Image (cartoon, rainbow, N blue to C red; front, top):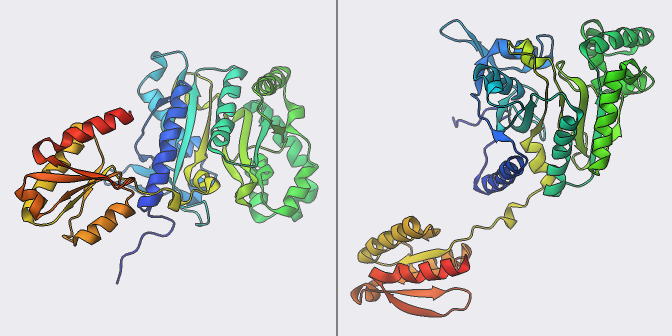
Length: 422
């Protein structure tokens, strides 16, 4: 019986890995030029971290989180998201003493046991940012603009940015009563899940994906009407700054996001290119989360995004990602192989050049075909005759020109060639 990968997990082959690495490199550079520093946290955390942050009444914790009791008796979990571990690390390592505002970013895997579908796997990958320490609306605007601009820069089409404000904890409690009053007359039309949310957290009904319920909440009272003057002013300034940055957006009074820790601004970036799974990333402000996890009272703002969704939206063609080789060494015979290994080592370690050779001991013609397939710029030919004369034949593949060079100084030709290219 063959052992297969676990349901909801996916192997990344060589071509996919090249696409991922290319996009990851762009993301690293993008965040760093915005002044954000990378953080890497363990994939295993105490289960209580997510119970407290996400909420023990959510599907993520109740149904989707991979958790178990360790030999020590601790309840551990594979992280289902990366904001909570980032905030835990921020508190544990006293990062608030390093600077007034800490700007962090991450790229890494997360795990949820949900039904696998296109763009949604049980092991998936997130990238995102967290800015901890600023309560000001310009911080909201910077991160929202970053989230929109990174997709725009990468060429994702048909983007839309959706904004809302959910106010403070007190505002959400006030609005929950108003929303429940409105929904009471529709209680029999709600799904079982929404009826459960009606009792425990009615705001989450606004996040429904059921058409009939979407129609019901379309006419629901707006949470924006419950904001106090400071909250309204904060939201107006966020919009003003985004307008100044030429970031297009639309306000949606029903956007609440799926996590309970958000306060004030919430947002999503979407694309119509992905069908029903249209959300690329989302986030918002969470001013109480650091304190709730045992840290000092500190405001924060961030977003998280799916790498798989991003790669789907980019629709990169692996055929376009052809392997390119600087030098391919053709060796025929035992002595030629010995010299080829030595030349490979010199060119790679001394000059940093990508060099390949054949290890199947194929024929000369077969090795030349490999060199062509790998788009090699140069080929070094080492046969029995060349070894007897202590030379190698260097061939420029684009022009077909070739000449001989002594084996002990053959690397000098490539030192000149590749330094000139730089």
